[in-house]
Image (cartoon, rainbow, N blue to C red):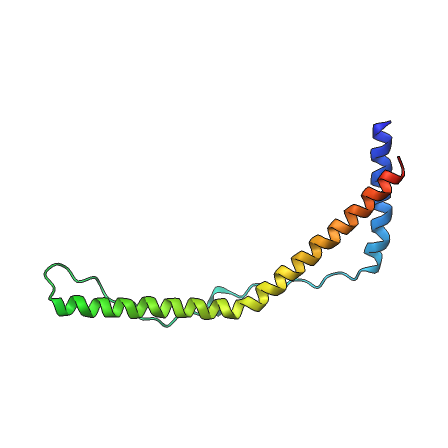
Length: 118
C-alpha cells in the first residue's frame, strides 16, 4: 500500500511539473568566466627584501614606509574590486532567493496534493 502511494506521488509530481516546464523558456547559458589574463591586476609595488640587522635605521624606516604603502594599495584595490562585484553578488543572491521560494512553493503544492489523496 505504501509503494502505491509513493508511485502515485511520483506520477503526480511528474504530471504537475511537465506542463510547467513546457511553458518555461530554456534559461540562457551562463556567460563564461573571464580568462585569467583578462582579470584586473593591482599595480602595487612590493617592497624589496626586508633589511637585515646590519641595515641602518633609515633603511628600516624606508622599508616600513614602502611596506605600509604596498599593503594600503592592496587593501584599496581589494575594496574597489569588491565594490565592482557587489551589484552582481546582490543579483545572484536575489536570484537564489527567488529560486528557493519557487522550489518551496512547488514542494508545498505537491505535499498538499499528496495529503489530499490520502
